[in-house]
Length: 292
Image (cartoon, rainbow, N blue to C red; front, side):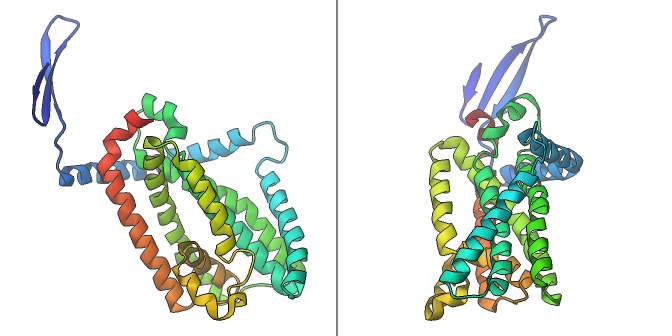
């Protein structure tokens, strides 16, 4: 084995007794790393059917042996909506017809956000066997997490539909604005999975910290109370990325168009997140296999 700065030459003896050499470079430029990262995403797009099947398999394995499967989560969400709805409608001085649709929508959407972030911590460590055994793009693991939670969200939407049917509360044409906002959620979900997945692969103390942050974010992000209840302090929510990201989807589905400051704030935080995620992924992509 011959070592030179930035390059290592390894001699390999084949079965026929012939000796060949292999150069291993350790000084890849940032541009070269970016090309490799782009190639990784390209391979993930090409393997989209595999991503879908793996996501569906994750759900089947998680609820294996269960009669209702993922609908247990739907039932628990419905019970929580009913219990908290009756209690908080009295505490906040609002009618059930006014508060329950808002709460159902908020809890279901927040459940998607919090679960994606929680699962993102195990993006790579949870797929250690696959990463070590099969050559597969790392971005596929991040996309797998998002697709899996979109499928679960599809089950939980039943809670929103039932509440709207019972209370005859339906959004208008404003709901169409939730479509591009949800696409932004998909992009942000992949970005956070790559970012936290890499961090948590290297530093195993990060997941408990993330769990604590998400618990705190639940209470300060306007999930169980309406933003207008804060009165003149409502403007502070614009600096909360969890609130602005949540509200760009929740607002249109509730029949309210968020203000321009909410969209600007959500876009700003999304750009920062995607940029940080891309830089991290480009920097450590080739190290993930060793960290897991």
